[in-house]
Image (cartoon, one colour):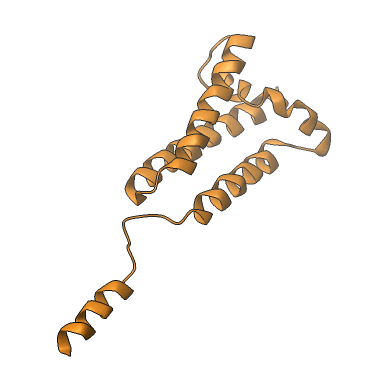
Length: 116
């Protein structure tokens, strides 16, 4: 009888090494929303959202071009796919923090473009 109880107790414990499928979805879109709000001084600037990766180019002193824009969106797409596809918490945190750091640099670049 005691062994049955221990077996049930083990099956009830949560796996803390994996992440649920809902959390990455929320964090990804919430982070994008915060970045959009932080990078826009006013609502009129939202129309320039397709050029958002140019903020990264500004931060790293890279000459803006269509290639840079495409690579910027490619990086964000790859990070987004990775965020949604990984299930291990440590891997998720590394990818998510990379995403957040890039967004911080990007927002800073966008703000410096707006104020220059």
